[in-house]
Amino acid sequence: MDTAQSESSDYLAKRTLKQGTAGWVLLAGLGVGYVISGDYSGWNFGLAEGGFGGLLIAGVIIAGMYLAMVLGMAEMSSALPAAGGGYTFARRALGPWGGFATGTAILIEYAIAPAAIATFIGAYVESLGLFGITDGWWVYLAVYLLFIGIHLAGVGEALKVMFVITAIALAGLVIFAIAAAGSFDAANLTDIAPTDAAGASSFLPFGYLGIWAAVPFAIWFFLAIEGVPLAAEEAKDPSRNVPRGILAAMAVLLVTGSAVLVLAAGSGGAQLISASGNPLVEALGDTTMAKVVNYIGLAGLIASFFTIIYAYSRQLFALSRAGYLPKRLSVVNSRRAPTLALVVPGVIGFILSLTGQGAMLLNMAVFGAALSYVLMMISHIALRVREPGMPRPYRTPGGILTTGFALVIAALAVVATFLVDSTAATWCLVVFAAFMAYFGIYSRHHLVANSPDEEFAALADAEKDIK
View (tube, rainbow, N blue to C red):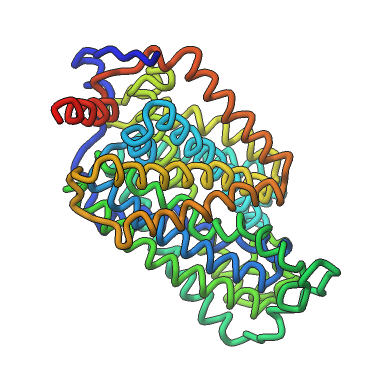
């Protein structure tokens, strides 16, 4: 039996974030910042799995999934604005077990994604020959220390820094697009030799199965945009601004992802960039514009690294505050930043980054993301069916048909991570199971009844009793 107890006002006072900091434009910048590193590196490994055609088809399918998913999340975030994001939605819809399962999947995604990005930052730094660095671990350590430090200074300062970095990164993509358009050759898109796989051709060199194998890398174009609702408690008028922010961010990312896929492969060649740590730079060759994009590319990678640190800290903060994870992890400092929630996943991520295996870490992050998407879409459907009268300032166009589509594609994406790297995906599954065992044995008996997420659930139960 799950049990919960109320904590003192002092307990919650030590676990209160700074409110009213972000409007919808800043939230849109946060959404783009989460993801924009995916335009600069990581997606291109999908060319080695599916070729240009496979990654293109996977990209179209995944873009549809993400659009459907953020429409569902916009509705849930308007109805349930809290720092737990997807965990809060699932807690209300699926109970403590479903809520913790969703929060755990998100934590796996957000703890591992910065480690993958750190390896890409290292590749960009090494390609520039900065500071004579040839071994990336110095870079990994530096970025973790610097950007966790900025977050500890407070959310207002962190989000403003993030917004500027993201704007610079977007400018870099515009510069890349202009430069790459001049050397675009359609023949470069299909320069990977076809294999003997079923359905193989110059367009699909790895056959039909290559489309599925490319799915985790197509996800990298959008991975972590679902983190926008994690800023709900720090946003102005969250029921209005969180949906606007996440939808605006999605619109920008649809444009940038499409442009990068076509122009990078068409300029440098799919074969050349399929295993590159800095594909946009390699696509432009040894040119002045390549160097410019290389420097600005660091801004793109840093923007996502910086913002996903924000995301993992808020997810861990919410789970800890409600008692699902050790409660000391949610204590905030004098600037209202959750200290241990920032530091602990950072230490874990740094250790993982030392593997230097960006593609492997990317696949592991995608496992956590796709699993959380499955659970969040089930949550949207469950809330629509069970609580049709819940106040929803924003409603998803198409309702459960929209989120049902996202649910199916997300489930296929979970399986795809095993196609790409079964060992890495299995390790993530083991970690997920360990978290669930901790909940089953200990933390479900020590939940905090008066935490915001538990209060949302209690309110729903009370309303059912009245009816």
